[in-house]
Image (cartoon, rainbow, N blue to C red; front, side, top):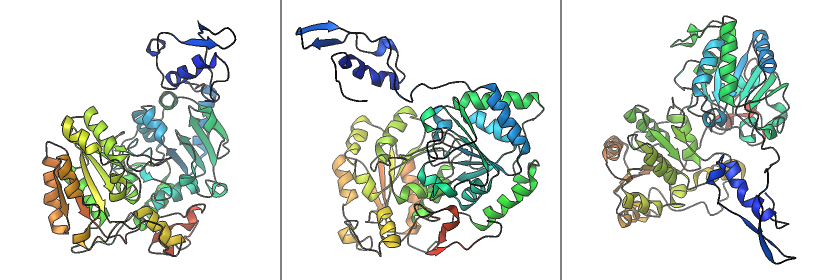
Length: 461
């Protein structure tokens, strides 16, 4: 919103945040007064309306457009659902699941959409994008019908935009008109609240006899057998993976162990960096708002304050911030709040003594030239910097450093059992890279799956 250019703007501009936040008129300050510089007098000014470009959401999709979508589904051989944060903010997770089970269409989420569709569901392909699953990226790009719901086609998902989903018809359901055709032209745009659109589609499908099918395996679905087989083969060939070790704690192992020990019943928050991607890959999410992360702008330091907020909102849930040593440092002062207010938000720091994601890009694209990314040597235990054990002690928060793999399960158990804020400082190798990885500006066919080698060309792609 631009700054005030007239006396009346002094009224309009302060009121704009209430409009964006969906506040009621009674939430606003009781009176605004504008100073007329010509008369030097204050006078009340109450604008009749406030309009913002692009902020006029259409809440209900048109039935004709939804019928057209159902017709496209009937013609498709390889359909895919590509869904994102709009499902979560629209509280449309149950409607999405019902729609997927009625149409038997596989689902891939964005990073911001993680949890909006159960990742243990046979129709789930987890999440797509730069560090998403190979099979989700393959399926979305090879689909002949792509139904995008509550997403924005951002570059971390699409890669080279001209190559993204070029084989199929694209339908885009979104409440924000400014997102339609912004990054990727679509055949059928549908302006709507996601919950309404999916709910209405379910009603229409029921009327034409499309019943909901629930199965524990992909073979229990029968609408697109050859498509399911192709997806199954990709899943078998290209799972998330890492090379485990006998004693060193791999960051992926630590996250996987946390998932097993919590049985997935936890709210996970993250900072921004490698740990964020691994938290998305190796912890499995079946519920909306169980993975809280800063995507898009990607703010380091987000993880622990978010964990505090989540714990206050859900005091009976286990809340763990999976963080990096660089990202955690950005808002380490929030340990004081957690301690003073008695908020039992936990943190598991994957401490490699480097700014890991930047180091990964330096290794892969800049001949390993370092630009202020080195904090210390994780193997030199006498020179760990910063020393989170001492720092947490200063805040009155329990913290323990874990060096050996055999000690990690018991340490996690102590953290989870704690009735107060607790920090685990888990030392991990700095040499690990987040894979798979689609280089920025490349297409899904350029994915790096293992090591430094580009994934070989695959039959049919």
